[in-house]
Figure 1 (tube, rainbow, N blue to C red):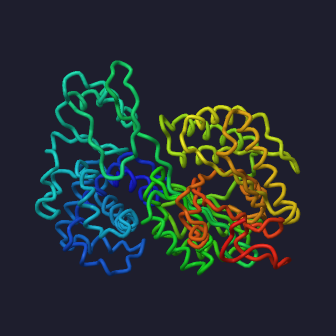
Figure 2: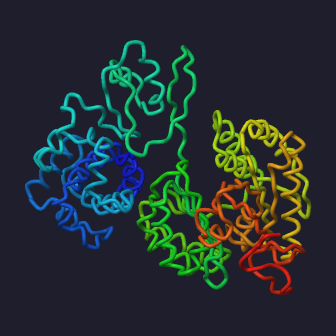
Figure 3: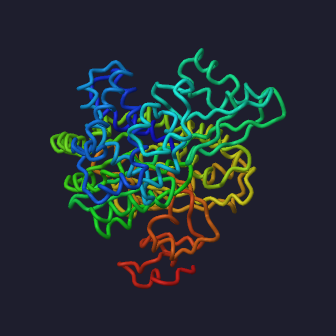
Length: 539
């Protein structure tokens, strides 16, 4: 967990606005390290742990450092180091303190803030200047390098730790951090005599690949996707659609609590993909209690939170403009924007490029869930009323089939979805035909037919609104899920979040279609009481 980098990305833009001064950015970065070290002290934190700290509470800084002399020293040292006016420096840190406090609390989740900061000390201790020893609790700088040994005073992208490098391993040690080096000449000087830096808490998972110059293996960091939340409201301000992708159950619980507070029991329809391929922090998590009611009050609105960005849409231009303005005020550290016009070809091309990259990065013996997720990234843009796979998708499916064939116990369900245009019955049948078409093509490429099953969901599981062109585009999709033999069908339906997440499905496969001729849907059909059973879908 690179706390300094996170605060630099989320808090600094809110504090600096249009001022892109590198000096002020670096000043704030150094302040974040001193501020985090101060909050790591339980006695300090407990003084205001039960307070409701406002994001614009510039007096909060005075409550963190209660001694005037300490506040003066911090402003003076930061101003001198970064060549910024001392009054301006004092103003910057006063604005940054409450925002940084909320972000750190969000990162900590259910972990007490002092414990979280002490467990992740390695991610910010090297940013703490030597002069800070007089304004921090005793012992906080025990592991901090001396001033002459500082790694960097520039904006960081990851914490670096240095040890003696074994002979002959310099170039291999350089590989994992080459992307983090800003100044090449400086990096050579800093890294000479260094070893591979140990991973801090919550760093991306690594995969192994052969080094080009020998038989030893070198760890290469795998990309971690930002956590995301996508919701849409209905005509009556109800929760119409909801999906989240998060890195752990702690973040899932935090998001679900905020959804439940805003939408009540409707939050249970939100589906979650909980996997370590996603980040365990969501920059907007601390503001969800404010953000979600704003979106709820706009009928047929949609919102996608991903990383530091919030993208919204609504069919009414005036309502959309106000929605953007209200959300930006509620989450000043986020970038809030209205969704642009649908670029159909661009969306298709981007999805195929991302899906291809995800498939190629699976490595040897990939997890079937990761295969399913990579397959689901692609947009298969079927023509209207047709179930013929476009040629542009066939090349990707050809490559995917070769990888799938090498994965043991690869059992996938292919699920078709439509938008809400046309009748329910028509959409259900069309979605099934499209899923069947994808299955048939994969079988033609050598995939065992018994390893693939299909389901048509029609318009019953939207991921976006159906009132805008962009929302309808996202709802028309093919998803791939793993048929997990260990998942009980009734439990999967009851939980709503987790088991029915992307990449996981159930064994009994109730198709939840009240209009078909079989008897495997979970709930009785409204039009024919002989179809379906509430408790025992066995056929």
